[in-house]
Each structure stands twice: as structure tokens, then as C-alpha cells.
Image: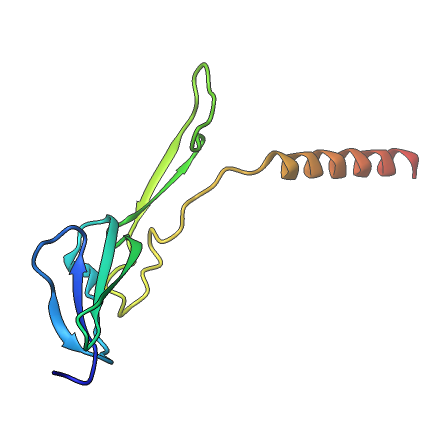
Length: 130
């Protein structure tokens, strides 16, 4: 009979485990081999007496290009014609930073337009009264 507990590591609903190890262990989970989306890491511990414990860790993989959308959001109520801007950009190879396409352009917020109109109006008023 072993003194240490053992663990089995499963990914999603796989029947075959990624491995069975004596604890404690350190391992690296390579998400580049997983599809983008929701996944679950399931760890089953087995103590020296044979009792089992289960821990599930849900996580989301996003290795592919990120998608930014402006003009419509989750669960928005809309009607008519809506201008929608979609941009997709990648992290690159993570060894060098890609400036081209790494940021999404945004339209100018209405509050900025209001500040510009207020400032121009104040400037005209000041010029006429001075």
C-alpha cells in the first residue's frame, strides 16, 4: 500500500485520463492543443485507503484571434439599421509584440462631441464679448 495519495487528471468528459500521478505534482497544461471555448479540468484524488475525491475546474480557452464588436452588445434590444464594426486581432507568436491590428478602432463617444461643442460655443461667446 502506498503512503501518498494519487491523482488522476481528466480533460472535459474524456474517459481516458491524462495520467495518474503520486502527489504532489507540477504539470503544464498546453492550451494550444485545445479548441477555443469552455473546457473542464477534472481531478480525482485517491487516498491510500482507496477513497476518492473529485474537483472540477471550468475554464475558457481563447488561443485564436480575439473578436471585438462595436455597435451591438449581448442581449441588446435593437430596431432599424444598426452600424456594427467587427475587428479580429491575434496575440502573434508571443515572442514579439504586433502593433499592426492589435487594437480595435472605436468611434468617438457622444460625451466627447458634447465637450467639443460646449468648448467651441464658449470660445465664440468669449470672442464676441471681449
